[in-house]
Length: 459
Ligand code: NDP
Ligand code: 2IT
Image (tube, rainbow, N blue to C red; front, side):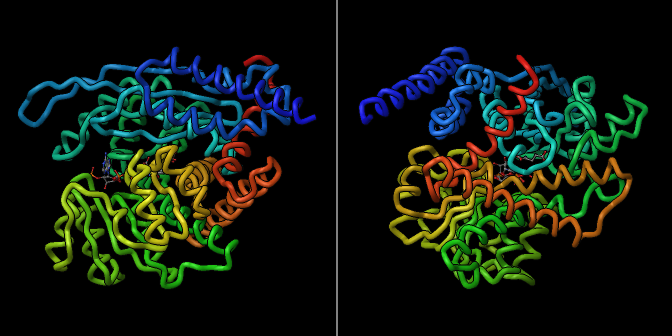
């Protein structure tokens, strides 16, 4: 019996290993994509063991291959009249359960490997929300930092001049991500509408409230991540009150994570950007400090160092905030910002929980360390799904041609986050990894998409 089990395990291991080797060979140099695939495939082993039809239908090979990948030229002119050429991307990863859905990232580090990792993650994240959304992601290596509004507008118009033919409210619905917020979505939407001569409100989400946006969408990722952490704490008989929280980043996700933590009685002691982090032991409290932070980032688009200068707190140049002792860490900036040494420092300092607001912020070794140490670990696909879930609610409102009240959207977002936590917890138990929400979230998201693909024939 033991021998048979081992044999079976060996057999299944080989299937995962084989597919992973194949992915690396077919997608050379895309290290972030390899990392995202590895994390998912490894955690799917118990599901593959339990459902032999997955291997028979070659579900792993099919799910790691995007349905379509688009790359295009984006020429634009700066304020001095000089011409620049950037590369645009849209990876339409999987549409088995709904139209492709996922954000656009504008950042100089963007290349195909980044967009593919994000698109791959998005497939499972969107499935977890319970809404009918497939997975996709796009963006450009354009750097919005230091550009004038008009330059950003010209870039967005040129980007949409190609993207428009590939998207639509029932086909592919982009939104924001790093470097793409309300301003960019506005310019993109205006250009789409002008080209199409159609008011397709549901073609983009994260729109302004006056032209089809949803209340709570700007807040949704940060609020959702905090709601998810509250659920993890509840399982341990704890809550957020008086918990010391380290938050990284200072963009959309970090801002509304900070707001929700404050509302629930926690204390945010750090914020960061790519230049360094601030440490405010008294917390980024409501009133002058929080207002200054939002104005600095949303209106003046300044650097987080200004917060330290203004409130006379410590600023650590070129460092990440994980050396600061905390109860809960909310990585909310970018991928691989918690490496194994950072995870060890957090654990040594007694961290109770980690809520991944960013996409893939922890390396695989860091995740394993958190899980081994018994830290309540909320993986990105589950913990940051509130943003795309509320995008789904924006699409629903656009289809209804109605706008829901703030309370209504927030209540739905909260319900979705509670459900995601529950599905991940239940799947983890069912597949023999109780408490491991990485395994739970990956299997729960994957099974929904895999079942749909198998039911729809060889697609
Ligand atoms: P923003 O552009 O609003 O903010 C990004 C923040 O992260 C900025 O403070 C930025 O600093 C920092 N940052 C970006 N890249 C790096 C880097 N390479 N090193 C250090 N700091 C960096 O983006 P969001 O807040 O929207 O996104 C943050 C994360 O959350 C991303 O991983 C995104 O994929 C994820 N996410 C976002 C969702 C959304 O709805 N917006 C939904 C789900 C996940 P600087 O200004 O110096 O660049
Ligand atoms: O990573 C993400 O989930 C997002 N950037 C949000 C995607 C969306 O379509 O709202």
